[in-house]
Length: 416
Image 1 (tube, one colour):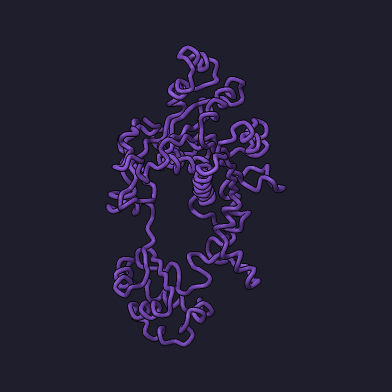
Image 2 (cartoon, rainbow, N blue to C red):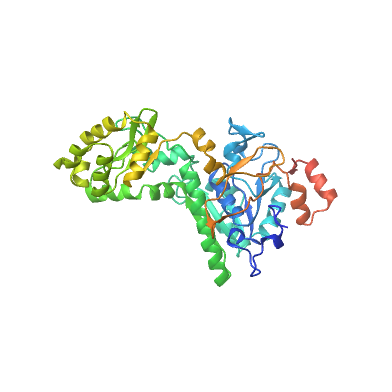
């Protein structure tokens, strides 16, 4: 039985190996991180079948549990969205006995995820160099805000700070307006995704040579990766881009246009699509205007073009525009709020699915994006309560019930 409550027998495909949705079955992951980037990385591995032990502080646990409202069943929804499929051990790392327990966990783990600032990692002996010296086969994923070897290495970092420092904030928001944070924590979640990819590559490498690796991911590097074409554009043209709302500098028309009941996004990426779009909206003269013949022309005359497009769409509803664009083969989508998305029967019957939870009867969670041969991975178990599995994990480490009780009484270990 693994940490998700799914037995090994249930994981096996007809060939005797776990199917792709449980391909990491048997890999043990120690998640020492909190907040979002590291936990999201650990959740991806848990979704793929790894047994993930999440180490939290006794009592309050991961700080993200308290990031609310909104909360659901007592935990913030950001925490719930990044910690499914794990078991929780509440452990005081600052105590000698806590450090001993941690070493036992490390000795039986394949992967450890840590997101301590470099100075904190040095204090606890948890730098990549120190961990590899003690556990040479261990895959260590170290997530930091900035380059740990650079001048900002010891600084803490949260998603909007990295969006600002990497330039993403400068190209987000309305034209001429104040900087706007991207509405989801893309730096944190991107770091978690790249961390999981790095771990998978390191595990594959270890299969060949038996050696552990340290996977180093900085949130700033993730921000630079997300902004790659903007950075390359600066090098190529010498021009610094600014925010364009929903638009894209190299394509027009491209972005949100008003309707009677909201807005729609039109993504008109070719000259032929532009012609079709104009005809569908009754804009025959605009389609023939030499200022708009080619995409490069339309980009140069973007302001006049967008004003003409808005005049044509604002008298229609979102649905009317969508119907016309679909019939013309033009990429289009209504701008929906999260309430509309959550109520969509296709979403509720697909990715946003009901999952069992011991404390939340109507619990739903968003499934991992991959599908294998058309099938989504099964639910991996709900996010744990703080210290929910402390006794179980210490028992697996060889501690007697009496010692576990004493450790709990002394505050070294916490329970739910």
